[in-house]
Image 1: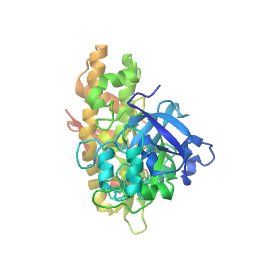
Image 2: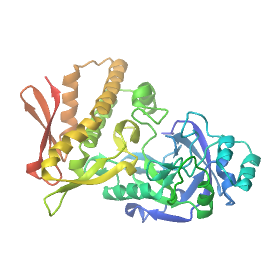
Image 3: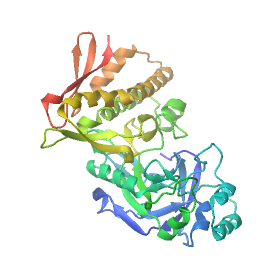
Length: 389
């Protein structure tokens, strides 16, 4: 599959230092060991680019290669680079162009280089502190380190069924370049190290936000892109979406650890969401991509069931909303209309029959998710009604 999206050519530079995911240390992946920057960042460095590479735009500060790089478990994965700069002013909807950048600078020599540089589609990394641990338009080492820690927990792409787009390498910007970038800020200066993330993603299709193709925005185009041209393909797509979606809703119990003091630890979501921070594989599987927003929390035994409910409720609407868009498109395209609840129960049973954590049970007029855990700890099993009849 050739990736679709707004084309973006980036200049290729050597990196000053690289940190590699333990799962990928034996592989030679030269394209994952480069810094990728837009033409508009040329005035900030005297480094000579080694060439250019074609990408498509993904999200505000990311780009994805147009052709797949490697295959994992029969799924094609593409190079995704996070931290390539932004085109938009962080405090308005106005384009971020030369004039605004120069107005923020005190360095007259850097101003002159920017003014005299050739006109290109503007995209800038900045030194404005953003989202606690990153510069606006770029990526900070603190966030990238969190992403790497989570990615190394996974069995390449899975944490007991919760699918992740793996971070392969953290790439450090040269300090001379970084120092120039940090001269651009509106209010607060970012003081950490600036890096890029080189990741593997199965597509640039998101659930609702931060992509030109989304389930919520243009589901028909998604069907066309993924070549879902038969009803059976659509049903398989839905099954995989449900399987990975339920895993997303139950992350804590899939990553849970028991501590000596009787507490439990596991992964929780911090300022990241299903609708904008996950991408879809062509087979319908949801891969969580912005791993920096996962945090390790510790809670008492008495709070585990509450956390199970909280995680489900946190993303349940986004999950069901997206499911409805896929199911409606399937029904409209292939003329196969099924009762909503009957169809959903059938897909749940098919998707979860081999799940490590979830079982289904009838309780009165409800179909319940019986939420176990990878420890097999019976005292913290939760129950959540997923369909009422």
